[in-house]
Image (cartoon, rainbow, N blue to C red):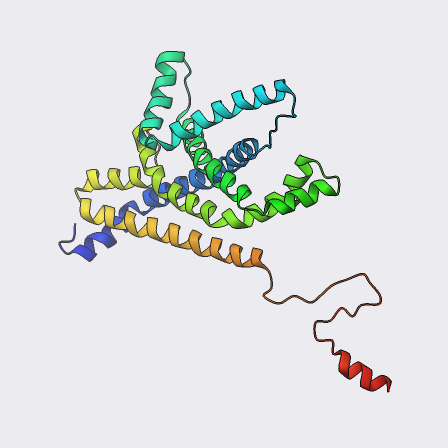
Length: 263
């Protein structure tokens, strides 16, 4: 074992590099898949929470929505108000001890991170939907669109653009927070670094490597998501498009110049 810091770093990478790569791969797989599933859960919960209800609606519809929203609110508050590590221990070990449900570690990992992400995304989606001008909903209903059509074609596309930064933020958080899954035996980045540190007694060097890898993963994802946001923004300048044959479609149209040519 080399005596200098950088020599030990190189030695660890040469000897235990594959362990770090496996940990990074597992971390990214859990984070990406769980964030995707969590976004679906969040959109579903957020849409249900924003379904309009009036006194003119059927009493059964109002009662059903009240019960469903109560359950969803409890879900959101519980999973936003408790640490993911506690949730992992409670779900993985508690389900086996109380309900005799023996989850695999991988299923438990995806399940825990997904429902945790879904709780945060639910509030994000609800806020994104409510941020859209109510006049757009009224306009959609005025032309005969149902609530589902209004959500799919008018509200959600705009809300998605507004909440894209938060989706990216949740992915970054999940990349880092997968380290708590080591308590249920998942071999992710933190688990791999801890194993290397315990085997070689190089705690500072081993976790320095882990910290750098975490930073590379989160930085790369944040840059890619920023590019996606810019692509969703579209062009800065738009040309007027119309099907009216009597109207000029170019934004550079000059009425004065055209008049002089006719004369």
